[in-house]
Structures are given as structure tokens and as C-alpha cells.
Length: 386
Image (tube, rainbow, N blue to C red; front, top):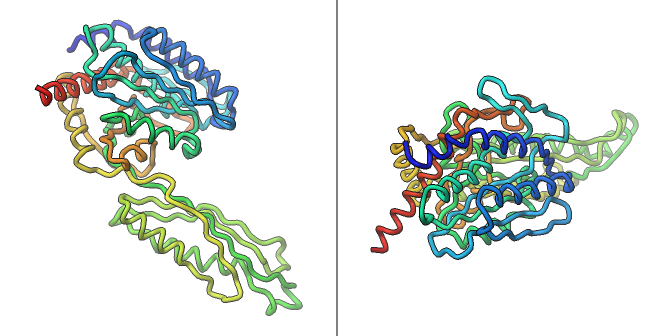
């Protein structure tokens, strides 16, 4: 095994303690005070594990927790962005924390506090075993990923443009432990129909039933799903009506779509935005967008996967890849053309589920893989510059 692996193995108890501390610091996305407490803990942890050579820039937020950027001072090596979020979907006290059979359970431990922590320890292993780092680490910890990265997207894209590659520390795919070399793009639409209300018994013929019109639209939307292309369109919520004896004048639906390419996203969005009511007296309002572009399995991203496989061979780890339906902040960086690889976090299972957990017995191995990827990346750059 490598020097980095040995260092991490020797500090396994420290890693365990850090993990417990960061998971115990619960950080529900919309509870800014709690999220900022976690952010302060991360500042302390960075200082303790990596020293004061890293400059911290705080990006204050009104609604969400403050975003945190850490950059190593005084280095001109290739910049690698370690991209993580520290908000979670769980309310404070909703999910207990426990260790059981080398698994750690707790709120956000899989998605994605363990992955965030592993990026810190991966770089720590390089700092402690090398005279000089092969890359210049950049850490961006955001606070609003679970609600769509509305306040952090611009910052993510801004920082990513200054980096040569992006390592997304989201967890590995459950069950296979695969890295994620492709993610679907995610779009969200709200569609409202205004009809005409009327008495359901005395003047039914005078009304325009908004729920009926929405039902016609639901059928058209669901028919856009094309499994062969990896496209899904899902009407997930529907609202309408006031009482059973009133022809409903208002109805609305919320639509989620997933696509594997920007070309397919354009097709779906055009189809949705051209929807018309069956009854010309009804009015349809359509509002939405592609919230996250797809992370496509392109040549630049595949080079990072090949680098990961090379790193795995040094550690006797088989590294495989997968394509998944959920999006991450890596979707944004990949769409900018910046080489991006996802799923470098700690294996486990149960994202957003009550059995959420990681395999702590695989923490050191996965962390060492990230460190070796940095080593190889630096070696390749130095070779190219000779």
C-alpha cells in the first residue's frame, strides 16, 4: 500500500472522531443558524487537519448557511476543486446516530458529510507524506444543494472556472461503489390551468373544468417519457378544485423531468412549453426550466475516470463507473466543459432514507484513492510540461 494509505490507516480513530463530530452537527438546509454552526466546525477542522496555509473565504447568505471556500496559499500547481455540500434533508433530532457492524448511521453521513470529510483527510495525507503537494487543492463547501443550489450555483461555476478539474465528493453509487461518470439533467415545471367555475348541478354546462384540462395535459406529459433515451417525465403533484359541487376553475401540477443530454433537454422543454388546452376557453400558464444540466459521459470526464482506475491499481482496488438519474453540483461544472468526476465519497446506502449509512471500513480505502488520483494528476501535468 502507499504512504498515503498507511497515514490514513494510522489515523483511523481521528477520522472516526471527526466524522462523529460533523454528523452530530446537524445542518438542515433551511435552518441557517444550525448550518452556520456546522460551517464553523468545518473551519476548525480544516485548520486542525491542514494548518493555516489555507485561506478561508466566507460567502454570507441571507436565507441559507454561508458558503465556504478554502484555497492553499502560495502554490501555482494545477488547481483541483473538491466540491461538497454540508446541508442535509433531515430536521434536527429526526435521525439517530449509531455505529453498527462497521457501518455508521446518521443524518447526512452518506449524503454527503463523509465524502466532504474524506476530501480533507485525502489532502492531509498528501501534506503529511510529501515535501510538496502535486496539486493545489481548492475546497468549496456549499450549504443549499439539497434545495437546488439556488444561492451557490453562480459561486460553484465561478470557482470551477479557475480550476483544471473537479472532484465531486458525493457518495459512490449504492451497492456497486461505482464512480459516477454520468448524471441526468433535471428540469422542473409548474403548470397552471384557469377554467370557469359554475354550479355543478344547475349550470354545469357553463363551466370549464380546470381539473379535466390538467388531466389531458398529464397524459401528454407522461407520454414524453422515453426509456430508450433515458428520458423520464413525471407529474409528481396535482392540486385543484374547491368543492365537489363546483366546477373547478383552477388546477395545477408540478412536473419533474430527467434527461441524459442537452439536446434531449431542449426537445422535452419545447414539448412542455408548447402544450395547449383542449378547451379554448381555458388558460394555461407554464413556468419552468432545466434546473441542472446533465453531466455527460464525455472525453474530458472519461480521462478523469481512467486516472481513477490507474489510482485504483496502485491500491489494488477495482474502480468501476456508472450513470445515475439524480443530479449533483458536478452537473454545473461539467456543463462548463471542466473535467468532472463524481461519486468519490464514501460507499454506503440510503440517501434521504432512514437507513442512511456509510461503510466506515471502506473510508480509508476510498480516501486513499482520492489522494492517489491527486498524485497521478500532478505526475501527468509535470510530464506534459517537461
